[in-house]
Structures are given as C-alpha cells and as structure tokens.
Image 1 (cartoon, rainbow, N blue to C red):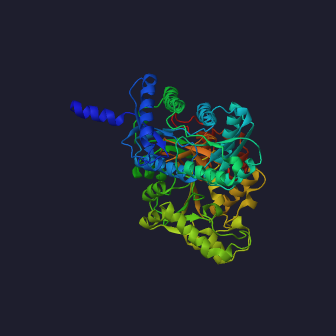
Image 2: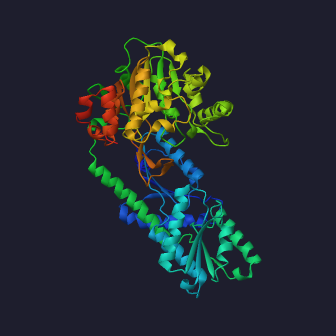
Image 3: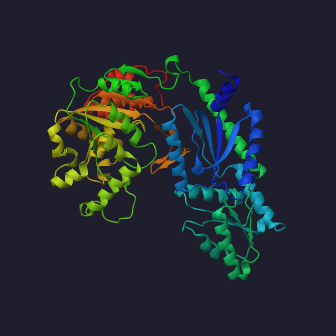
Length: 566
C-alpha cells in the first residue's frame, strides 16, 4: 500500500464529529456557524490529543459515513418532532447500511448553565441601563416538540428568571397554542413593566423572525409596549463555543471510558463475526448474515422442512428501533426454510390520526379507514416490499376476528385460516426493548380487538397471565418458538435518550446482531432478559411464566458470554 493510500485510509477511519444544526447553507448565519465550528475544533484539539474532524451540517443532510466512529452533536436548542424523527431515522439508516460505523450522540439540554448564561447576557444587552429587577422576561420557543420539550422551555424560562432576577417571567410559543405568544403579550401588557423577549435559539431562524413580527405588530397596537425589547440571538457566542467543546470532549471521554471497561474477546472483536452459545434449551447468538441466522434457526425449527413458518412480528408503532423493521424482517425471511405467514393485530398506536370514534363500540364500522392505516404503516416503514419480495402472507388477526364474528374470549381466538397450518412452527419475533417486553409479551398483540387496555390489567402479574394464556392458545395449535432480535438495533431506555416514544426516551444500542432463540418461548425470553440486566428469579413477570409455561434453570443460571450484555 502506498503512503498516499495509507493516509487516505487513516483519514477515512478517523473519528468524525458532526454538529447538526437547524441552519441551512443558504442562511446568512451559516458562515458565522462555520467559523464557530473552526473555533470549536481548535479548542478541542488539546483536550482530545489530535486534530479532530469537526464538521457543521444540517439535520436533514446527515451525511453517509465512510465507516469508523461518528460522534453526533445535535445543536438545535428547540427540536421539533419532525427534526427529531428525521435525525433518528438517519442514524438508524447509517447503522443499518454500514455496520462497521459506530455512532455516538448526546441530546440538547436547553437548561445547561452555558446556554442560560449566553441567553441571559443577550437579554441584559438588549435592556441596556434598565435594571433587570424592574423588568419582565418572555421566553419564546417554537413549541413544535412534544410536551417534554415544551416543559424544558418552561424550565429554561425559570432558570433565566432566577439567574438574572427579573421581576416577572413567562413562556410562550409561536407554533403551539398553549400558550401562544400573542396571548402572552396581551397578559404581559397588563403589567406596568418593560419586557424583553428572549428566543430559545442560537440563531435568528424563521421561528425567531416570526416571533419578532408578532411582537412588532403588537407594539404598533399598544403604546405601552413600544419600548419593549427583543434580545438578539447569541449566534457564535463564546459561551456556546465552550458548550460545544464540553459536549464533544465529554462524548469522547465517555467512549474511551467504556472501551477501557469493556474487554471484547478476540473471536468477537472484528465486525461481522458471529458466535453461538447454548444455555439449556436456549441459544444466544451474534449473527451478521443469512447463513449465520439460518444456523441459529435450524436449532429450533424441525429438521423436516415445514409447509409454512408462522411469524408473529412486533408492529406496534412507528418509534424508531422499537418494531420489527424492514431490514430485520428481510434477513429473517431470507433465512427461513419455508414461506412465512406474518401475524399481527391492528392497534391504535399505528394510526396517523384523523378519525374520531369510540374504539370499543365503533371500530368495525370504520374498518375501511383502519385498513388504510395498515397499508400506510406497511408503506411508510418499507415493510410491504419485503413481504412482496418473499411472497409472505399477512394475516391480520383483528380483521379475521371481525370476519368470523367471534363473540368468545379474545385470548382464546385463533383465526380459522391458520388452522390448515396446524403443527407448523410459529416464531414469536420480539425486539430487545426491555427485560419483560419479549417473546411472551409479544403475543399480546394477538388479542384481536384493536383497543387492548382492559387486558393490561392493574399490574404486571395480570398482564403476564394474559400473555401466558395466549401462548397456551396458540401453543395448542402450533409449535411455538421464541426469537428475540437486536439484529440492527436494540432499545435501551434512558430519560436522556435521543429517541422518544409514548413510553419515554431511549437510545439505540450500536452493537447490532444479537438474538436469543429457543424451542418454546421461555428460554429465549430468560436469556434476553438477563442480557438486559434482569434477575429473572426475582421478577413478578417471570414468576408467572414459571408457573404457567415452565422453566429453564440452565438458561436462568448459566454464565453469559462476556459480550452478551446490552
């Protein structure tokens, strides 16, 4: 290899640090942001010990990674739901398309002391000689995020109020009605105070300009508001430069600390390698391709090729990384020895909204709309082309229940169209997304009614018994097998995680490829729970599993492989 080729390879493998901004390259502030990035690079170099590759890029232009390590530093102080979803999808795509790329990230804390100080200085500058203790503060934000993001805006408002000693303070939003900025201005005008508006953003973006227009229009209609001030955006303020430096060096140090603690075995240190370990009736494996996955499946499927393999997928919602995605399903269907029949029931959380009706009494009357939602889900997630490519049949148990007019116990219902495959294997294909939300819990989606809240019950024990009842119902017809997969992502719940769902924030673990599998559901779930830190012998959920479905002592007690921890 020539020296130039070696230098090119080294550059390709060097870690990349991406500051993801809500600015576009066509914005006037882009040059200032680029210059700030250069200052961040110069400040980070002495701490990191090398000249880092730090680049500025728009959130929607997340670049393809050439491999190696990428550190993502979101920069928007007020994420919209759309921006957060786009970012999550781009990171997931990178991890799926380039398994040799390791992506690390953090999240924006708008209450960070450096942000508070930067915005506070802008407010003081706008007020000039006017004493802050005699003024009111209005913190304006876009409000396009979720309730948690708007709560962060209220927190930032209070921090500014306490730090600077304003007489009054209020929060308002320009893209959310509760409370809308115009209404807040009306209330503030009743207070005989000079007010200053501070926008929750680093740059004067479209939302900043929209807030300015609202305030200026209000000032024209109210003489008492003519002397109100609008604080300029901090832009490339030195305090925000220090904020970026802290985050970048902090991510790097955390990564180095994890590397120091974690000792990988030589066999599993290279990308694409695989291992298979048996623990009682279950298997832990790290797979990278169809052949290695086929080898794992051969341990739980019958030696004689079955007519069909039924697969209960996890299609509960759109939240990135929490459902059986197109890539994982494509790999599984390519590894199965027979054509698959995909099973799932409709659920309200897959809907995009737009229809108002009582789901308990009026769902059947709205079947046409529900079918549209199902088709849209398969289209948006890319699952429909996978089903078509593998000639897989999709049986929606909710539609079957309605077609058959079954008035009995929903936990005992098995569609008649499936009975022709009696005795075939049925995989419960679950995700790594919690120590009890695994293969047994995955069967909960086979309750055919789209609103299942009544079956959740008052506690985890109730829920576990319902899931075990479903396992018995389907187990009496088919040979149940459990597969819990983290083929391209596994969920780790974290209040500060980048991704958000109705159940809270979470991160996606970068080490893709882990699965657990077993004939029957119990051993695969035990191993997957232990990999996520669960003591299965001290779990109310698994107490019910032991009582209802049996137990696998070796899977519960045998030492796990050194790498098999999520």
